[in-house]
Amino acid sequence: MDAVLQALADPSRRTVLEILRDHPATAGELAEALPIARPGVSRHLRVLREAGLVESRPEAQRRVYTLRPEALVEVDDWLEQYRALWRGRLDALHTEIARGKKDRR
Image (cartoon, rainbow, N blue to C red; front, top):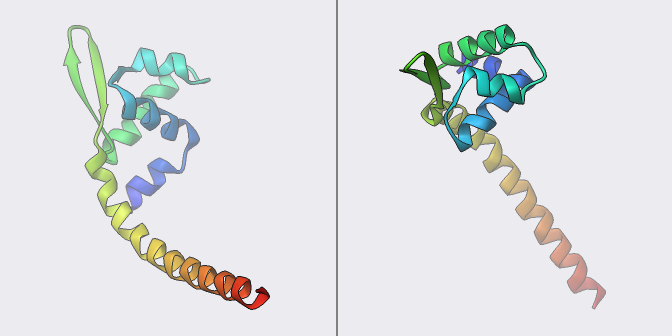
């Protein structure tokens, strides 16, 4: 999970994942969408690949990259603990707001 979180820490890598969430893309297509040089995009793709967030397949002379959403499952499970905490707090806030409205009547 640490490798995934470190990969997600970079805004350019998050942009790559957002693009790949919608459709597969080549490194060249990704480079056009980012304000960095193509070698930088390749480095970001390597980090994402090593973290298990993307995979590539050869297609003629190019490599096509796709998102591997299953790599985010462990992070999602970890975040669920915090979602549960916030749900409880928001439910308590909702109860207090409802009591305040009732008391004003």
